[in-house]
Amino acid sequence: MACPFGEMPCGSQPRTESAHPVRTLSEMIFSVRADRLIALVLLLQSRGRMTASQVAAELEVSPATARRDLEALSTAGIPVYSQPGRGGGWRLVGGARTDLTGMSAGEARALSRMLGTAALNDPETQVPTMKLIQALPSSLRDEAERLMTAVHDDRVAWGELTDDATSGLSRLCDVIAQRRVAVASYQSKYGECSVRRLLPLGLVNKAGVWYLIADGECGMRIYRVSRFEEIIETNEVFDPPENFDMTAYWDAQADVIEGKRSGVAAVLRVHSSIVPVLRYQFGRYFTLLEEDDMSVVEVRAHMLVGLAERLGGVG
Image (cartoon, rainbow, N blue to C red; front, top):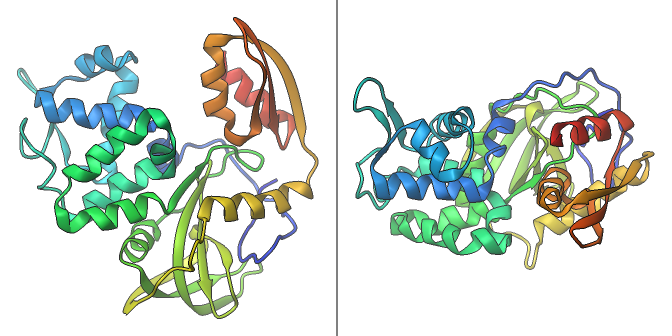
């Protein structure tokens, strides 16, 4: 089952759709943890050139994981490039002493989208994240911070993972960062197309499926990004609602959907070293019941198969 969330003011019945556990580009990008992403960018900034093996040794991951992380940075638009051959490796454009002032607006937005709210809310990544923001050109800092606070990562899928188109994601990041009104052509879950004037407020990555939270003539709605057929940025600037908390709004709306669906839970006794892995894997569906060398935790999912897949991935 997958929630359509196509156009939702306060809740919607879920619909059935075919799904395949395919890793999308957005899922691949967001699989790079914020702390590792920050460390990776700072490593390249301070060292200049590094091979994937050197990155792996520094970050204590496998060379394959380091290579995927580097490729994800490059694919997302971060100015990182690979130089093959002897003496080659990965570099930040501009060389070892770059302070990121060579970043374009698009590259800064890509970095902000990858980090999202998680990097600002996590005590371990908050300070280095702010350092990265301060290293950006002054003309891009406000936009980067604005976009970072407007991207939320919800790692637990509704049912199986789906392969979702994200062609409109960059355009939506642009209008959110600049607080521009957008005129969009949108197809509802029933196949009906309409043109809407939207005030885009934030984006949510729900385990590889992207949703836009936007205000408009019909009030606050949640739209599935893959259903946008065209997004036009206007010159009209808007101010977001005062004291609007995007994460709280999303959680409240997601709870409405989840309240209509049966869920499954498991109580586990695990070694304390596994607790951070489960907390990251299950997000707000993780509860620490007892903390000790062997801790007791509860993890939840919407379907038994989803719970089994995630626990199986932990090992």
